[in-house]
Amino acid sequence: MSQLLIISNRLPVTVTLEQGVVNVVKSVGGVATGLSGPHDSGESLWFGWPGNISRLNAHQRKHLDKGLSDLRTVPVYLSQREINRYYDGFSNGVLWPLFHYQTDMIQHDAWRHWKTYMEVNQRFAAVVADKYQKGDLIWVHDYQLTLLPTMLRRLIPMARIGFFLHIPFPSSGVFRILPWRTQILKGILGADLIGFHTYSYMRHFIRALFTVLGVESEEEIISYQDRKVTLGVFPMGVDTAKFAKLANQKNVLERVAEIQQECRGQKLVVGVDRLDYIKGLPRRMLAMDRLLEREPSLRGKIRMIQVVVPSRTKVDSYKQYQQKLDELVGRINGVHATVNSVPIHYLYRSVSQTELVALYRSAQLMLVTPLRDGMNLVAKEFIASRTDEDGILILSEFAGAAAELREAILINPYDIDGVATTIKKALTLPSEERHARMRILRNRVLAYDCYHWANNFMKALQKASPVRTVAFPALSSSD
Image 1 (cartoon, rainbow, N blue to C red):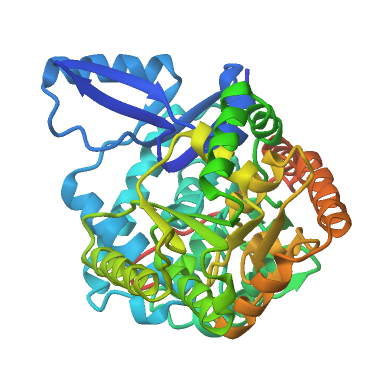
Image 2: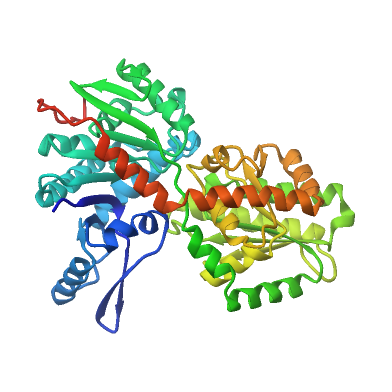
């Protein structure tokens, strides 16, 4: 029976070592949840890196392999050097900032890591090709594996291959900054179906194909190497039913009551973000600073809880970013604090799902203000959690979610004054308008959840034009 072969940089598992015993458990998250249907039913294999296992001995490695096999996952083992170069150096040091328009954050010695990026993609291709059986569907995920579709096409020419980009595809003017722009585009074009979160990302990709390769599109079909490649837009959702169920649980509602009591009548503004320079956190803090500077009467009447989840803690640029954010929050609190309260409650840590949903349910206002974001599932999690059909979402127009969530209040995160003004207005919206906006948002998020996203992509991949038997050249570093 044919299977779905899912390939991502990281396996959806967490490997722990406790008192010498290896434990392998499922991880939760957007892609893992969205693909849980076919994967849990035994109709798929998942390929990826299981994490750093250098501390495991031979006996523990054997137990790890069995645990991974039981979860129908196939490990692609990588050395620390490969992770440093392929993942940290090239994927997150070059592609991540470039695709998010943060060109000043691109590592200057990127050329040192390109060869390893190619080699790791080739390693993935070899492992997948070894497990492939005729009729299997292959679904490759994200920017760490842009070369993989063509590498797989070379090894298994008749395979049906899909590729989905979870981050923005930048404008062709920005994309052309990349010295390896040709190889990246040719790598992705090995797929039969290429998916994006929004139409704008797809249009940027089409324009890049024309400006870099001279390849034209006919609507959403690309003719390339005697093949037809289909492009599509598949906005990713969240597990809305799960969040709605959590939001009505007794322990969550009890925590909501505690938070409301702690606020003592203050208006509650909430932000939840991973530590990353694309999330626009300093500008968000400055918008709160500007609001309290212009409206001193709001001091003591508004409270912001900002959760920042640690990320890439060993990367120097992220350490510096965290320090800058810490200092900024401290300065703002020092200026605007009252005897009884500080305006920004800054939590640099992960929070439990119970605490997270309780914060979503408690907020009068949710701030989601990235400078650029592929989708941003936090916005959708907030909406899914508001079973009371209340609360206001302020959303950056540069988040992919903005294309769907038009009833949110859209802002330009670079406009600090504008964001401050919008926060003030949002906190005084009439109840009727709040409920009307949230009702529409919830209906949309409920209809287009993560399962809808996965099913739509797989259906489109099954319908994509069958490949022809053609010679498909390998990528080279000078191609």
